[in-house]
Length: 234
Image (cartoon, rainbow, N blue to C red; front, side):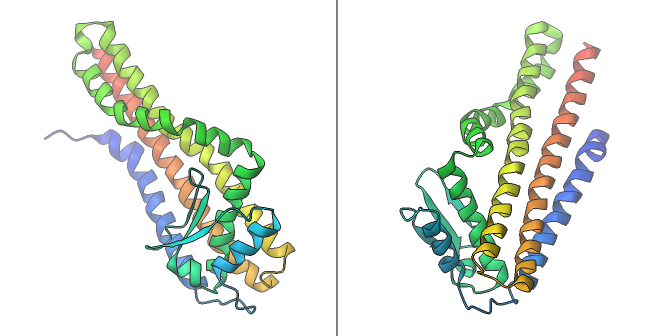
């Protein structure tokens, strides 16, 4: 039986980080979903208030199913909030809702990292789909000539786009959280103590994106090692 030690060296530590980050965001959200706003404002109301204050009255807010499925859709210019966030009056709900508003404001103001992320989405999707097949074909037939070796490296480049996408995602997520927390503070949507809860939720959520980048980079490094090792043998 073949033992792929590269997976345990490169990928497993990053996967463990991703699991810890996922557990952290769920645990933090569960904790602060029980800390309620003294003003009794819901996530949807907070989002609507901030949108209107920023001249974005044209952006609707919709409720969707699921847990932590909240997102801003730039294609339809709609903010979608999960039921708990939409109707919730907790510091967690308000923090998440205002975070999504932060993304809407990024698009409206032409925030550069989110423009870059949006621009590379199509090529990233194509690259991620073709990467592994190209790498496998390139490795298997590398002994037949340089063409197949280059095919494997083209596959690596396609997979690298995934890591680049995750890298560009980081500043957009951190910036959206900073915008959310500044807005909540400036408009007194939450008290100072309540704001701490929203900050902890958004910080925990940000760590999931850090972990996603770590996983993408780890997988890329593993594939680079495998391709170099196999093609060098030939």
